[in-house]
Image 1 (tube, rainbow, N blue to C red):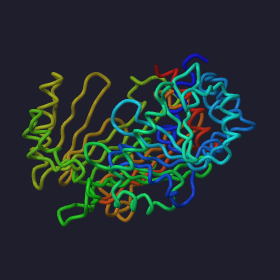
Image 2 (cartoon, helix red, strand yellow):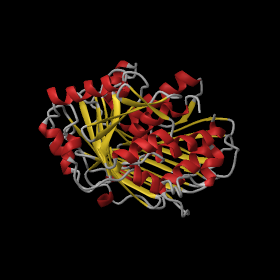
Image 3 (cartoon, one colour):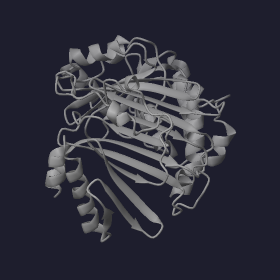
Length: 440
């Protein structure tokens, strides 16, 4: 057990974020919301009960297929689930900058049951906290709340400090309003980075997860707000992406990444910066998912369409070929609107099509392109339809699909495992434990 329980409190804080699953009621409890300080870098509401359900835990034990792959993981999770007497359907994970500043807190339902379960799990009462003698984790009980702290020392001092932070500088009202507005999600909260706040909510049903993220400035305004300058008509791009592609990407506007052009210029590609809008579409299709012959030209097909500034597509083609020739030593052949670059059995074809330069490798067919109304108003669209046993991704047991939509106000996402009766977390861990050892 040495060090195994050291991750208990940290796991409680981040498990919902790492695994993207949880559950809670539709409104934030005021007693927990008041514990969020304005300097908090993270505040996440999640339900351990919902995690347990999605993991398909029965009688306190993880499914045998997960236990077989990771005994250490199973021991930690099962130890966490053995603790009783607190509201496991209402947990707040809150974190600040600095060490020992990430905790989880919940309401005490039965103090006697909580103390008994902690003692049975190996915790000892030390200086006002229950400390596990074999791991850096403590539980502090105060004012009908229990705090899970990722430290075996000075746990009460840590809790006192975090309570004082929230009392002296409580979370801004706009943050609380934003949290209270997320009333239809089973997992929600926010993260702060570089003065930007990502508020999110997510729900999972059976083997799928759906959610959204809203990026806000430090005053609560939307980071990428709509404007007349935002180009959202991406029908010209969408025809280059198949909705059933293994991986497809449409990048319609750089409002979220306003420095892309300057990055190109500063990287020595100033000519490209002048010739392209940076709008692009990419389509990858793995043709032989069960094959390990990655060097076989028939393994996959790739198509990338890059938009030129009006009337400059031939110049953009020439610039791209010049860069490739200079960096690879390969020579291109063709005309002002058609080029071919190859080495042995490998060949890339580049064509000018209206205001696009389109590069193709392999046999590319867009059988089901996105219609204009499928992508209306979107700035970025990513789709994936990854088959089971895609060799380059490891030994996956299920097909899975994903769909990411970015508009001027929010990011929406969908992830689903196909052809399985497993619930989302069970399927996710089952795939990860099978795949990760093969990738490293």
